[in-house]
Image (cartoon, rainbow, N blue to C red; front, top):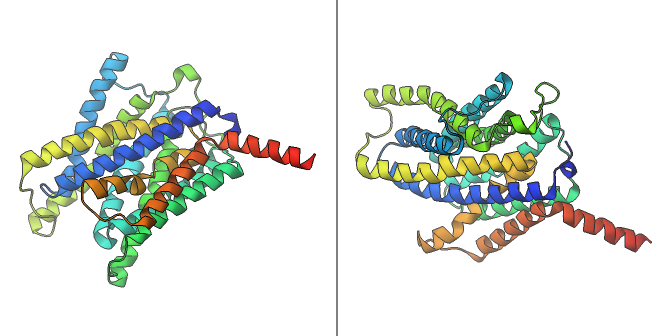
Amino acid sequence: MDAASVSETSIRIGAAAGLTTSLFWVLTSLFFAAAGRRIAVTWVNSIRIVFAILLLGGAQSVAFGSPVPMIGSAPHLAMLALSGLIGLSLCDQALFTAFVDIGPRRALLCMTTSPIFAVILGTVFLDERLGLVALAGILMTVVAVGFVVLERSGDAGEPTPRLRRGVILAMIGSVSQAVGGLCSRVGMGGVGLAGVIEPLPVEDQIPPLSATLVRMVFGLFGMTPIVLAYVVLARRGTGEREPSRWPAGLGLTACGAFVGPFLGVWMSLIAFKHAPLGIAQTMVSLSPVLILPFAYFLLKERVTPRAVLGAFIAVGGAAVLTFADSIQGWLGSLLTVAGG
């Protein structure tokens, strides 16, 4: 499917949903970071999904009259299941482990490659062809986010084996995020998968809310072996420290689950439904830049001119992505007039 075949309005809806998703990721990271200082991170990761399932089930009941989500055909259900396992369980666990190994700044820098993988996947499997203007917008955004995150990664390097493991895990998280987006896009039925899975008629396509609930359920399944491993390690005295402040930790986890796994993932699926994969993935990857105002006003961190410049470039890249069709048409007209 050529990007030009997607209506401009649909792309703008997807881009706006993706930008909103990035903002929600900022908020949820603040909540979960605070929760992780009070209870073990593994419990935070698991409990947040449980909270999200309850919230999504309630929203599903209100919107569609039943807590049971619409799942479409078996192939589409399988794709949503893969999206939950890969895009939630595997991606988040790899990313959080990379935070420990190489620090969040380096890990986030590696994660800025996710839109590139998304463009490759969209081209290979969904036959999405982005124009030069859209590709330029993606490049601007990725470079700007990397520019900002790299500027904040001046800490000392870890031993080589740990550094290598952290980079590998962060890249696994980056690829997993892109694969999860691909599976979500196909699973909702709006697009087919290389002739293997056919797109569904509009009336049979799975709403983003239902798709989010399905993803969360399978994401919880994917967390089961991780939790079991944590319990075993904790009993042997080699796991994370034992939880200490459950009431505060649960409250912060619930807030994070509301803005992240509930609203954030829901918005991300709206982005993947309406916009080409590369555009959607880029827009949901802006959180390292959007966190700057929170770092300055809330966390009282120093924000450098370089970080501000990177933020403006990223916003410019997002604008280019959103209005790529209009810009490309305007450039085409300009070249036609110049050539005439």
